Every structure is written in structure tokens, then in C-alpha cells.
Amino acid sequence: MKAVFVLLSTASAQTQPTYEQWASQYGFNGDEATIRLNYEHTVNAIEALHTSDETATFKVNQFSGMSWDDFAATMLNFHGGAPALSNVPFLGYIEGEADDAVDWDVTPAKDQGSCGSCWAFGTIGGIEAKHKQATGETVSLSEQQLIDCDKSCDGQGTTCDEHCNCGCDGGQADWSYGNYLDNAPTYTEVSYPYKAMNGQCQTGTDSGIRVIGFTAVQTMASRGMGSQGMTDATLAAAVTQGAVVVAVAANFQFQVYSGGVLTNVPTSCGLNHQVMVTGYGPDYWKIKNSWGATWGEGGFIRFARATKGCGPFGLLLYPGSVPTLASEGVAV
Image (cartoon, rainbow, N blue to C red; front, side):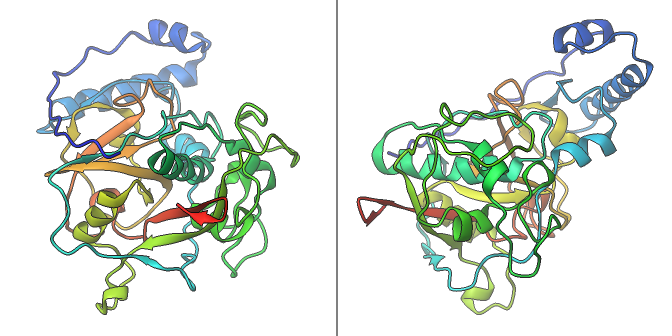
């Protein structure tokens, strides 16, 4: 069942903890000079964000002792190879029927840890959300299964490069839906727990949920407009029907986001992170992330629905996807 609401708030800037307080909270060595320098740089950059005209708030978190380069190399590993759109049906465009606000009740945000597995969390999050939408049941499926077992590619690559799924080194949800997970067992998280590292492919307890393909958000090309990119309207129409797995270009603002609607959004066209759109308001998108429930708004971020360039954080550049599930042979 779809829940609809509008929630807008602006919080005041927060005072950041001292380095010693932060190191103690997250279990870091308080005597490590490099971590201290990175932390101090993060705090200064957050203060600069709070003195700008930005309406969202920001705070330090588990990543604040990392340099941006180390953070990006570790956490942001969406593989932007060829979209798996061959013979894939498009979500029908609902002309004029997008709601003012939508907020789907999806499964809680999880934490990918120090592993570039955002793609696996996006893939599994999409399945969990579609199953919950169809049945009302909350399930928790195994991201580790994909990290260890899924080596799907886009047809242009055969190794651990930008064209293939490769565990903690990155991947893409579409390739999982159209290849490895196609009518295959999906294991429960309890039986195949997350390790935040690459491992050997194993088996677990079959959840009974089957992916039998996926649907792509209708693009401008599919509407005869010559571009593979989505529009704000086509994405909103798709999210009106259910949560959509997408890719974004996460930056420092995204990394240290704490709450509110982030308004000063970049609209560049580079992508690095797989996430899921779970709702929207008149002026924002709501995104489920994979950095744990203590990040952002309970693991979610809201940012402005910019329409310039490739959209906010590049959101409109790459076609979003929704897995097609089967239950006793009936698609749901």
C-alpha cells in the first residue's frame, strides 16, 4: 500500500564533536595523525556548507577520517557500462497522473561497510521493496550472495572492469536482474550473512522469491526523443508505481548529509553510486542509501528535484529499473 505525505524541515547547523570524541565513538586510533588531519578537513568543509545558503544539515560520520579519494575508491563503485536494456520492457508513462507526494514503505536501510557493494544493496533493495509492495511482507535478502556469486556482465566485458559485477569492486543492478538472478534462488540474509568482503560462492536458505526480469523507466529515447536519459516526469511517474533502483553521482555533500532537503545539488553527468528512489515531494526526491541507519535521515536522503544537466546528482542520466518478481508463476 502506498503512503503519501509531505515532510519538510530545516534544522540548524550542528556542532561537530572533537576529534577525540569522534575517534572514541567510531573506534579509531586517536593518535593516528592522518586520520586526525582528514577529520579536521571534514569538519572545516562541513562548517563551510553550513555557512552557505544550503538548507540541509551536515555532520561527521563513520567516513570522516577518510580522504575523499579513499572514500570514493572504497564506497562509490557503481559500474556505468552499457545499460542492460536489450529486450527490456519500459514502465508505462502515466501522463498527468504523478502524485504530489509519494513515500513507499520499503525495508530498512542497511550498511555496506568498507566494501564497494552499493550495486548489490541497490539490487537487493529493489527486490525487497517490490516483494513488500506486492505482499505486505518484509524480507531481508542476502547482498553477500551477489558479492560472492554474481559475475554478470553487460556483453562488452568479461572481467572485473566497468562492464561486469565484481563484488566489492563494483557492479550494476540491471546486470543482476537480467543475468545471475534470472529465475534463480535468492537467499535470506540470515542464512547467507553480509561480510563486507569478497568470498567464495556458497548456498543459503532459499527465500522462494524469484526475479524473472526487470522493467526500465521510460526514457526520452523510448518516447522518440533520441536520448537514453530519463526526465523528471518519467521518473516521478515510475515512482508513483513503486520504488525504482537508480544511480547517482555522490559527492562530499552527499557523504556528510544529515537531514533536511539538500538544495544546492550538482547536475553533472558522472555516476558512481547505486541507490533507490523510494518517494518524492513537490520539490524533492527521497533516496534509500546503503550507509546504515545512522547516516542521513534514518539511512535516507532528500534532495531537490533539479532538472538542469543530468538532474540532481546525475539522477536522470541512467534509466532506473524495477525487478519483475514471480510468485508461483504469477508476476508481481
